[in-house]
Length: 408
Image 1: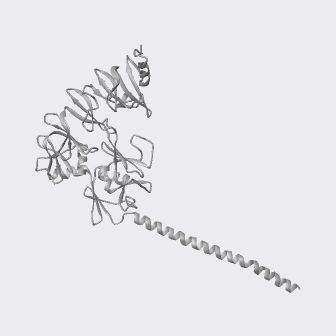
Image 2: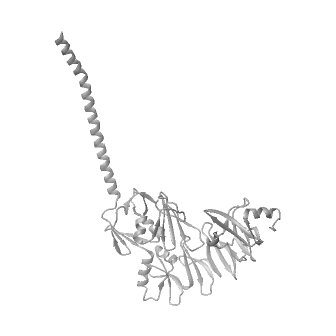
C-alpha cells in the first residue's frame, strides 16, 4: 500500500506541475512577442525620425554655406521642408524670444523674431502671424501663411515657402538638394552692385527693402527722386516721386510728388488715391485708417479713399505717448455708450472723441486739455486732464451727463 501511495503522490505531483510549465511557456512567449513589438516600434520610430530629418541638404545663407545643425531642417507630414525659427534667427543674427512680443513671460508655443525694428510673431499650430514696427505708433499687422507653424523637439518650425512673407526673405530650392536663403539686406547690396553704373541707389530704408521679397526694387536717382523697378530692372513706376513708402499690408505704395502732394499707387503704378494731400500716413491697420493733412490740419481717410471725418479740421489725431508718465499712444477708446468705439481728436487746443464707425462727434473738443491712456502694470486706464485736475474718463463722462463740467 505504501508503494501505491507513493506512486499516487508522484502522479499527483505530475498533475500539478504540468500547468505550471505551460504557464511559464506562455509567459516566455508573451515576453518574446512584447520584445519583438517593442523592437519594431523602436525601429519604426528611428525610421520616422530619420525620414523626418532633412539629410544630404546643403544650406546657403546670402551665398555662404552653413553647417546644418541637428534639428535645423525637417520634413513635415505634408512633404514640405521646415526650418527651426530659433536656429535660423541665430544664423541670421536676428533677435529671438520664446514669448509674445511685449509679454515677458516664457511661452514655448509662441515666439517672435526681431530684425532691427521689424518684429514678426508666431504661434504653434497656427498660420496667423503678426508684424510690428518698433518706433512707430502703428498697431499690429496680421498675415496668413500657407502652412501652420510646427512644434518638433520643443522648437517652432516654419515652412521654407513662407519665409518670404514672414521674414521678407527669398528662398530657392535646387535639384541638387540645395537650399538658398537671401535676406533683404543682402539682396539690396546685390542689386546695388548691379545698378552701380545706372545712377540708381537702392533704398536703404528697412521698410522699403521688404519690397525686395516681392521682386520690387525701390530706388532713387542722383536727384533723390524715387522710382520702382522689377528684378529685370525694368521701370514699373517712373522717376517722379519725392518719396515712396512700401505698404506691405495692402501691397501698394504711399507716394509724394515733387510738389509735396501725397497719394497711393498700386504696384503697377496705377493711382489708387489721388495725390491731393500735404501728408498721408497709415494711422491704424485693424480698421485700415489713414491720417491725412492739408494746410496744417488733419483728418481721417478710410481704405476706399472716402473720409471718415467730414472735413480736415483737427489739430491732431490721437494723443502722443509720454513714457516718463506711463502715458501710451492713445488713438481708439473702447465703447463708452454702447454705440461703438471712438477716436481721440484735438481741435482748437482741446481734446474730444468721434465715433469710429461714422466720424460723428461723441465728445466735443470744448473742454479737455488732455485725453490719454495710462498703462499701469498691464492695466489700461483712460484719463482726462481738465481745469488742472486729472480724473478717469468714465467719471468725467458721468459728470458731463449732469452738466457738472466745472471740477472746482
